[in-house]
Image (cartoon, rainbow, N blue to C red):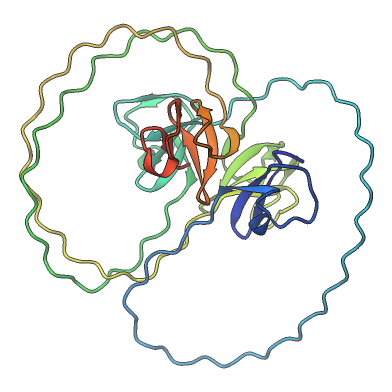
Length: 319
C-alpha cells in the first residue's frame, strides 16, 4: 500500500504506489529510499598478512522455485472509521546545544550519534545523561590508529568570540494541539515489556519499530514483529591519521547579548515527519517535511522552496 515502510539490504524504503514483488532497490516507481545503510569507513594501511585458514567445503546451491501466478485484484473494501489521534512522533531539533531547552520526544545529533529526549531538560549532554536521553542511532566505531602523518602547520589565531547568547526565554505559551501519529519511543528493548504497534526501541546499537504487538521477541531475529529503523554503522578499517597541528590562540570573548523579549504563545505541539517523496524544486516545503534526494533522506528545519537538500544546511538536515 502507499506509505508502507520496509527494510531491504540494510536500507529502509517507503511505498509511493501499491504493488507486489517489486524489489525496493531497483523499482523507483514503486519505492523511495528513506534511510540508506551506512557506508564503511575509509580503508586504512594494510596490516601484516595472517596465516591462511583451512578452506571450507562448498555446499550445493539449491534450485530456485518457480514464481506463482499473480492473483486478480479483489474489490476495494469500504472506508473504515477514522482512528483516534495517536501519540506525537519524534521532533528533530538538529545538533544538540547546551543553551536549548529540550522537551520530551525532541531528537538531536551529538558527536555523530542521534538521541531522543525521555524528559524535558537543558544542558544535559546526551552521551552522559541517560536519565534525559536515549540513544537512537549510534555512530560507527572509529578504525584503529594509522601510521603517524607529517606534523601540520600551526593553526591561525582564533577570531573574536561571537556576541553572547540571547537573554532568558520568555514564558511558555499554551500547549498546542496533539500532532499526528508518529513512532512511540520506548528506549532500550526489554524482554519483559509488552510492545504495541509503532513502539520503537534501541537494541545492540540499532533502532527498530514494532509492526505487531508482542512480548520477548528480540528485534534482530523477530522479523515478523520488528522492522529495522536505523542500523548501527559498520566499524571502519584502519585509517592513516596525521599528527594534529598545534591549536591557535583563543580569540577574545564576545560582548554580552541583549536580554530577550518575552516569548510568543507556544506553537502547535510537535509532529512526526511528513514524508513527501522525491524532492522537487517547484514544491514549497514546510517544517518537518521529509524528502528523498540523491539516495539520501532529509528533514526540513524551516519552510522554503527550491533549496537543494545536500547544499542547504539551513533548510534541511539529515536524520
